Image (cartoon, rainbow, N blue to C red):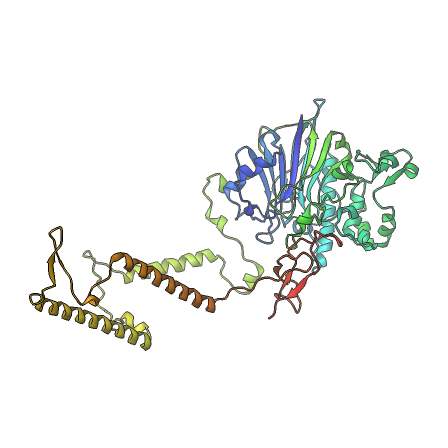
Length: 581
């Protein structure tokens, strides 16, 4: 008996190339946690939310449209008994421990701060019953998170990220304290160690970054015996190693405590370290290199596996005996991330009832008629300052009604289908020829004159041929079949045989086509061929500068291969050439 939990940052739910049912089935997992769905509730469509054989639980961004968002899909055999949107508990759903008690957040949090941290749609929590190999049932909470990214141009986002980390830790600790195991999956948006980064900074600044220092406290240090350094055997938590100071090695740096004393804010964030989790992948593969989960698409870095490991699956130490394996699925394509999966011994005990926060209970998916009040929202502060109307839809509806009434008055139609309006247009209707220039009209008139002259010429020829019909001896003769045919000594008045006429037509068409192609080629020469890079002698790719500065939106040519480590012959060479302005 084994079950599978999978996590994947899909970079947009609407970007899937296949149907939702086919997509979920192809992942072969009991619980599928998706991050960065980029859908708000008004954008969520029923085929994406209601999937046969699954129940889904979404968290939406309330700040920006098409931003952030997570979703958890549970198969029928893994139906949860409780679910909650967000970590604060202010939104839909409630969580409970194994004894049925409600979980509460420790610490001092203001409602405004909790709402701000949870308003970007970054977390969904589901609770399940699981039966281990001995037949004992336990409660497991799966926390699906998409942690914030620090924008270099927005330094205030670093504090937001650290506060989100602390909220995640406190929520996990509260659930764990209620006799429930905890599994944290998702995009943590921090590469923990140098081994998790393709190009780590060799200075101390890499280890001293606030996010890594926090993970050092949140993750329980792991101990590896000296004789296991070259193997892929599983390791033990540091607290269970014998002779930890002599025969073991701590993966977490020992200088973190000194750094903590230097930063008052960090001490505040990590004041309580009683609850820690295990990095399941490093538990099984402590020295595996290049196990990256995210790559830069713009530089084609996935082709050279030049990325970072920022997608994790954590669990509490007590749940480790049930974990059979932790995987990084680099062969699965479809996003700038790859999935990560956890294989657990045991089986889920599905709940007989769905949690109230399940998307199946959303009114828009139940066929229930919406109230008119649900379409209106209170005025924002900016609208009040600008004295905007309270209900924009009402004003728009009133204006549209008046417009329809005025239109119906103008269109007072009688029974015979004629308008009773006495006013008629006195302006003379313009002809289509008035829209053309004088040059075009003169060319048109000249062509019409040529046609008239040609018709007159043909009529004169027919009259002359009719008058001389009886005087010419060689005009009439009977062929072998007895039918009468006419010939004239003036061959220019008759067409040549049909076959030769066709050949001449083909030839003239070829000449005209060649002339047209030469003309278009002169007017539209097309883009110049890309230069060849000096390192691989291959055509380069055209790229555009997106970074703000004097060269923004300027184009340049670079090697088409993916960025890689310095000295890698298969990686991108240093060729660079600006496109001339």
